[in-house]
Length: 355
Image (cartoon, rainbow, N blue to C red):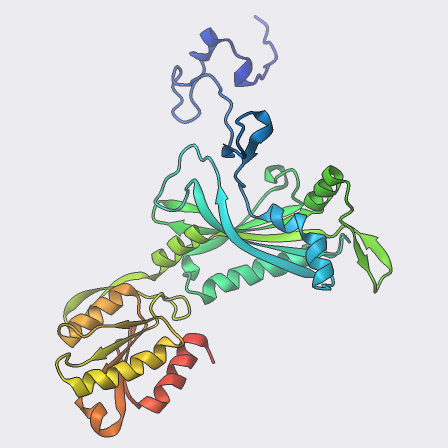
């Protein structure tokens, strides 16, 4: 017999009796596919007293559009010159079909985005895009994401969103598999142009240096705070042996550790020790989130702080009352240093804040 050309059809066009013969892309077995159904990734709600079509509203699926709507307002009031950026953090909502993997994919999440506005020239955006990829990659490393757990995914042209000129993701090797952590997209002028068309208001920038008007293009770094938190915990968690005992420790970078310092009086029933420790604790509280722990053996207290990711413990003992010095114990190496209280604040400032 003669061969007939293969005719491709959408699954939605297939009659129900033929649908049972189509193999599943996941298993290869026929008979498990259901008829296609419409699905809305945005959450719908009602605004006002009436519940009809005119009161329908949607929770935002991303934070970026608020920046684009306010572009002219921010640019003019701040007297900003292109290139400049607007950063925002806030809640976003997506009606995910399958939220999973702890806080990696959820229906309500915190999102951080920067819209960096640049001139529209074709020789500008590739360099700006690469600059933000490098900045974001190095920023992740600087706050404690492990280098051996991240790499880059460059989107091929046929995989790009309809508005994107280029997009590169920073992928992270989570315990459940490798997936996107952060994305840097070159969005062109799609968003500003779309808002201008819909509102009838121009979104042009008047460049005083070149005496021309144009709609700026955009580089957009975007990351979910929840995913970042998960990546930081995965990077920080470790187990080792200290003094013959197994230890669980979170090796958070000091700049992002939730508790920066723990103050530990050697004994809780000796008032002079407690009073001196409270004095140090109060001063440190003015700058950092500080923990107070006066119960149990000092070694056990160190272990508790290790599990919480606290980078430094300050121990006040009887020698403190004589020479005004304290013991500072560093989490990762477990090394202990003796120093004057006057030196303590400068030392912690340099180790935590970098200056």
